[in-house]
Length: 187
Image (cartoon, rainbow, N blue to C red; front, top):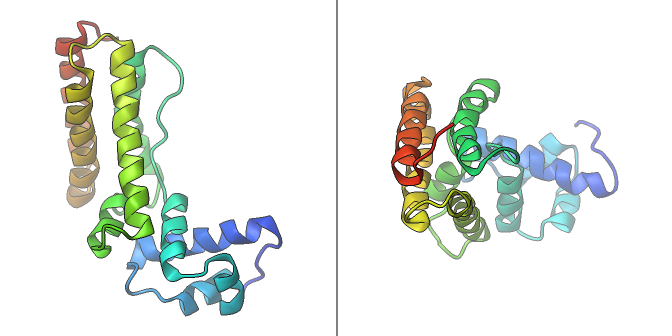
């Protein structure tokens, strides 16, 4: 058993270990015994921080890898930057697929805390696109945000399935074309 951190960092440590295991092997294949052992804690300690496996899964999802969106630049530059960030994300992480897709496939109950978190995060991403598009004065920000979000998700999924960056590069080109058409400007 490894030595786990103490205090406030312990909960984050357990969640990070769970995220790694669930992401690599699947939620249903990994039990709390295994998470506790790998985290270097007792089951009692794990359940002290996470009263149920469902809560552990939701917290693990928060600790899963994600793409960082740009916080500077023009609205169009930031949107393009989000797509370009996929390239570095896919090449610099041990990425094996979108955690939201992987977790959703195993969690069929839409009331599961992790499924609710996924829905909130996806809504947040679409809203981020929509806000940037409003700032860029797009003709129909909500519709274009939906299109960009589907394109973004598709790039993640296709890039993973094919094991190549070509889908991400194609999605980035397509996003730029859509932005040119809808916003009339491109960097």
